[in-house]
Image (cartoon, rainbow, N blue to C red; front, side, top):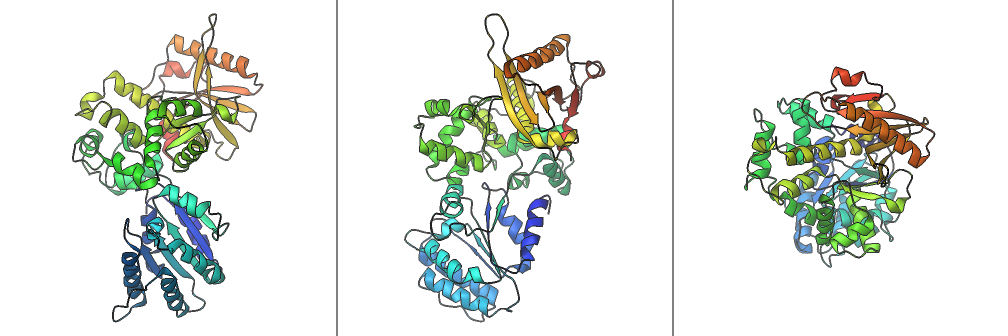
Length: 471
């Protein structure tokens, strides 16, 4: 298994316990939740049940019985239970017959779909957990792609499951380093620039990456997967948000509004652009999008939380809205020298650096240091120019990195005006924020700076993509 080291270490730790554990796994569609459990635990599972979307309670209960027969080794088929109360009773009998000292491991996949209309599944599961399972040496793992349901009905449950969850795993997309390792495991040998292009287009979603082919260039892969009308990802956007969110239409409105303003929007601007009232419903919606890694909230340095900018950082959504739904293009290769491509690539690379700013700290040997990421913008006036800094990393060691992020295929050559601009931005930041901390101009590029640029005193720290994402 590529990656997932943090998650498998946690699972190993939980497996050694001798008490009841209720583990919840969340994450977006296609991120690999099912794969993680079924492939890592394999024969350790004593029972697994997968919910079926839009199925009746009767149909779900039939599948419950079939799965129980499979795991118990029943010689002849069992009669399906008539209710979930009866089903959990039968499950208790089966588990009780196993070795007393053995840790029982159960996996309920697509948990929200099991709770079909008027089935009482969640009610009976809660009762079963509280009145029997919670006193056993048992590990129950539940997950589901419907993020809004999982958050509302399980994680933030105010009833019988309140505070019952003992372990949480939020499964994120692969990092760039994990993506590189995954590609190598498939005998796909892209260099870092090519892997960056791929990642900035479709992200680190294992299911998307699985369809890549050996011997295929990144441009060919993007054409086949995204731009071809029969491609795997050509219409994935239409399925992505409905699978995750209740009333997904409003989530899509927010995503589309954010896609038009790369630097981000305030709540008020989101409300105005999307037509969604600026109230509790919008708060909940934004939190769901943030919890599922589609957006981030970036506070301008020195401002309050209410001034935060929400920024779309999901690579596939940005690519889809720009190049498939927005202005459809036929060939990725022929598009790469156009100004629109360069603008998109610069912004997408900036997004990566913001999302993984902790890896920037790691690249300068400060990975364990407390730090926060901010944006900075000063509009200027009639007498002075404004200043915008791509990323501000405020560190606990009384220092701040002012990050200038450049996406170029070759070495980047800073010109005299670029050096003066770096110094001007540092001066504006100092003046506007009144910060007394050390301010380090940090230039981040894909393939390095030209020698003359490296020797200039305006550049305190220079990092290339491999320093940050290659580990």
